[in-house]
Length: 304
Image (cartoon, rainbow, N blue to C red; front, top):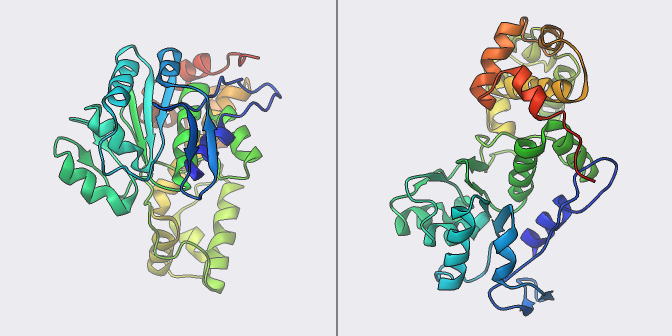
């Protein structure tokens, strides 16, 4: 039920210049479907609905240890074969693996079932830590609330940062968590005053991306030594200060490229890269295209 709720919320129509999605749930046996929380869900569409879908997301189901019906596997394979983006949330990855769509690819699923996925499908490189893995035409995400991260990443990839950020704000979610961020964190919520100081330091960094922001300065603002800061940062975010800042700077650069006419050099300075050349190098590494090409791709007017 959570998976169905996540995708329906993300791809709901909101107006305000945002894309309009033709969203539908489908199943191999249309009609009344019993959910994991006991509430019945009426699913109107059968697998034929996948024939025209641009994005197909396999949701988790209780009996995922049993391979899906051949008709489901065939529908997923056919969708991928005609160029649709095929994704999976949580143990929905088992359906993609059963269809052979993950063979030779990296994938993730809920950390609790990652070993089982790897055991049953040895041709799949399973990453038990990633929030999501994007392999181009196939993408997989971790469990539970990480479904939001996967969906927002796909929106960012296809429609740009401003669209993904607008929908994230509407859902009261972080606008972007990198796929390499750890699924499981030792201290997922602040536990003491040190965590509060860390949060204050990170909030200050978000508002001062034009500054160099060395780790020593962040540690000083958090009232910690550099070593303590690095340890606490990793425990709270699952990544390093450098990786966190890089992702933040790039995300802000994406939004400025989409929503302003600022020169690339000015954007580079505004987000703390120092020069257009540095921004370009980082952008090509992350997006595969230089900033100007990205701007041309994502300044189109969304469909109404």
